[in-house]
Image 1 (cartoon, rainbow, N blue to C red):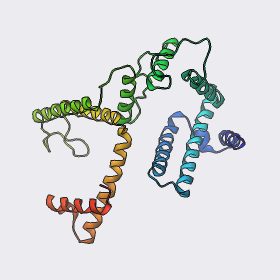
Image 2 (tube, helix red, strand yellow):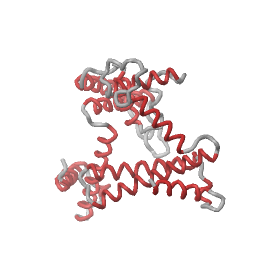
Image 3 (cartoon, rainbow, N blue to C red):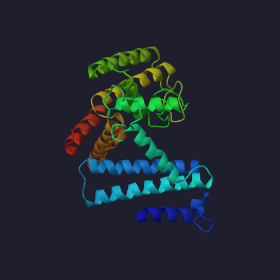
Length: 288
């Protein structure tokens, strides 16, 4: 714990009158992009280890990124403490208390009410305790109130689905979700038939045709249903899409290399040639 104490002292010095002007100038608003950047860099390091690259370099990178995020958390706590709101110790006390209250099957309280009918360590029991505590604290009672609106949309859809499912509001299995996906896809096709995108009609700053509200609405419903399918089959949609992004980047870069090797101008190629290059790129990357 001595090095953690050292970190607290270092951050305090950086924010002090003789410290670093940059650190001293930060507030909650200016730290937001740095927090997001460090979170995503940590996620990338975690993905590298999870993908099997658990060598010394990958583990060292994971440790470094976790430390970077810890620095941001400590700095944010110092900013709050400097305003007289609370300290890092207060935040640690709050989360420690919350974890004990939310895990009565691990930390039993003899005077507490009997546990819910749901399995003690289940998501349903966890969400039930959260809702009960929120009611006691006078906060909003909705089970969805704790899902940040600032989450990436797919992750937010996944978490909303989890919380609704904990209240019994869910499909019985993945087949019900698949049926919903087919329903939403049909509704999207109908919306597109009514409001076909016409290039040169209404365009935004990027030159993309402006989307009719009905089309956006139905596309959102379809994506929401797909996110719930990921939850039902054990494939979190945010992680699944991130891996699909990685596959697409790898394959498209292979297409670019193939075109360069053959002296081809990619934007000038017809659809058949592009398809052939894509198939060859998929074979080269050999990851399905």
